[in-house]
Image 1: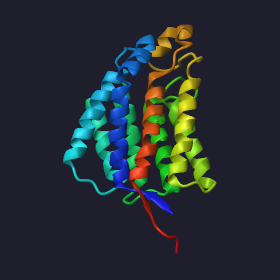
Image 2: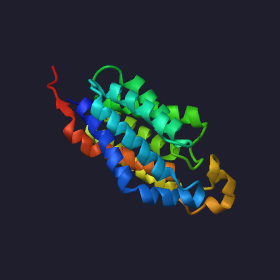
Image 3: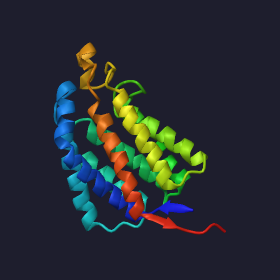
Length: 218
């Protein structure tokens, strides 16, 4: 069966940084409509700092990578995004343990990440936040793993669900964060945190091709 190793984790974070940098302006525009207008800029800065730290820091497992990411995002990303993403990766690090990740382990990591976001942000599904991308992603990953999917299939299921979850936030009224002050005016705008979450989860798919180890059963 295939497992995801530290090579995948490092490639994922690098891909996250590249994709967020490429979409920085678009994320800022989404945030400008219902927030402070700096979500892309803040996340880009944080992920750039994280990748610089990773380049200088040896790591042996995905969990070690996630822990470094958590610390970096908490210190470098302003607003709510830093603590929320940081907590997600901190919980992911704990769930990842000290080895590679098979399909079930990957699903558990995503479930731990979204629970961290919920605990830190006190948000629920439908509040028009990043939870609305992460929770369907975690649910889809769990279902795929239970049905016997491999790690790449689990990541594909998670990314597709996150993308749909981000799109689903567009017609909603926000119930958390700065966007909640807008009331009905928030309708028609996609949540920037949900969109950046979808981008980051999608970035894990090509990274899995570089970091999957094959081992024979038995």
